[in-house]
Length: 303
Image (cartoon, rainbow, N blue to C red; front, side):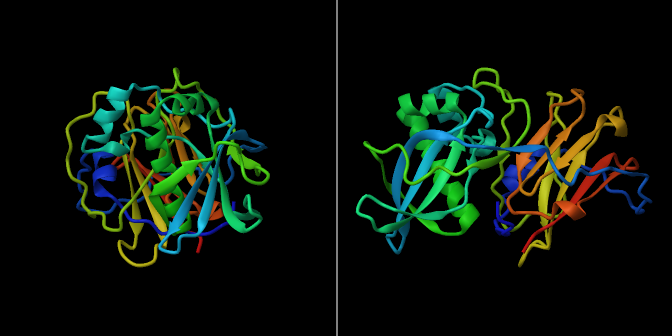
């Protein structure tokens, strides 16, 4: 994984819905406790197996791009939903609530069928979810749209999303590359309740957090914002409301180059999402302030 910063925008409709109101403190208090960050996450190299290959084109150049959809059981599966549930989610005010865990590899040049050079990307997903998109046209269309948008966001180029086809006689172009995957428990599609999140963010995010209805589930509410709000990003700031009943010893924070995981030993649902740009794992600053029960995680962006 190359250390290349990818500037994305911040969508307040995604971020703000995950955050309850934070009461403003008129006096800035001393930080009571230092939250220990983890600068490296357990990971392993996995070699995925072929699934199918998609050919599409860049816009406006019209250059060929191949996407190898490949499989590894080391990628978690999204929660299993029906077609009706997917349609309801896509038509809702927050379609980003359904996430598909995937590993997007680096681009490389491979010869196509005619021997001409073409750009190839490998995208690894869970084998159980692959079986679903193979059989279901709605999920397949949804999934490929997510893949194309992920490639565009990560590598800053435009894909002709309406112009693609799945190759019939080739499952992959070139040799599939190994992916470095974080070591964690991987659930099947039927068991998966909370998939890792692929966050899309827009450039402007209100500095003041607005109040939303109380959340009945045992979830740690949070938001992710960029600093400064406009221009080149200097760092990402993740803020979590930590209930008073959760002690420091119960918290486990892991920050990878492009992913954050916060666990509370089962007291609350884990928070697990991908970051919109690469951050420097060596200088993560995480602090828990018990004056307002907020955990702040400052993550400098790699340029």
